[in-house]
Length: 277
Image 1 (cartoon, rainbow, N blue to C red):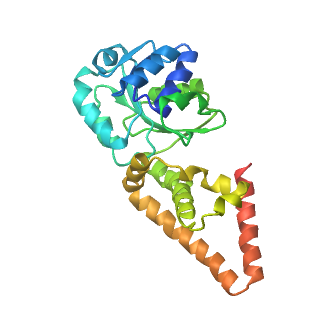
Image 2 (image 1 turned 180 degrees about the vertical axis):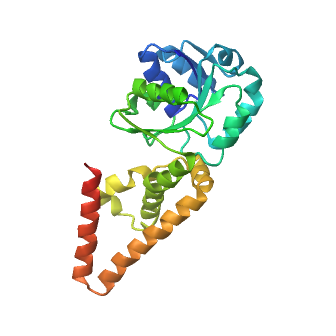
Image 3 (image 1 turned 90 degrees about the vertical axis):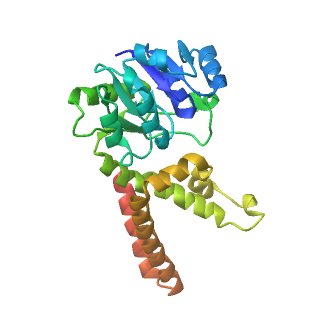
């Protein structure tokens, strides 16, 4: 399955096009922004493309939807008359539960199998696509009960060709629970930390710890507000748990309880080290 259509040639869609074209795929591109199409053609990311996907859908074995979750159902409803039972449709959205089951049903006769590349960059636009690093990153596949195993294998192969090396398969609900913690909560913490700064001279005193913690606070407000609200239940539960742990730390400091502080630090160090194994 070497003919791929990427719908949405932004940062990630562009990165997919760039990587897959290097691996010998016939990549087509579609985007409402004609400048993105022109850029992709000039760079050799795609062999053809345009603002309307009709002709390219018919040519493609795999269709990758690289845009906001709210637009996926609309896209499928509009173009599913062009789909066939030999095609695989996938998306790379950061949330799944809010739309994947409906998308799976609406996409028939094509097979829908969602996935999530755990990589990105704090910039927008196809011009930064070559800077996106997939090596060493996690690639998550989120099938439903209707997804054939052969389709999961195709999506995993796509991930391997993109450069990923660590692969996991999970339900859409397990995905959203975990991403709510590992991705969305960390972004929420970074945003809150930066917004809590009311000193105009902070930049004179920052070091690596602040830079590392707040890098992801430079955030796409349109995308991430949709992701947070689309995963509201899981994210709020994780925020509540984080608030509890922060209160334990705060109380230990207020009570000058050195032993309690040390125990919290030891626990965090142990848990973090386990993640390196």
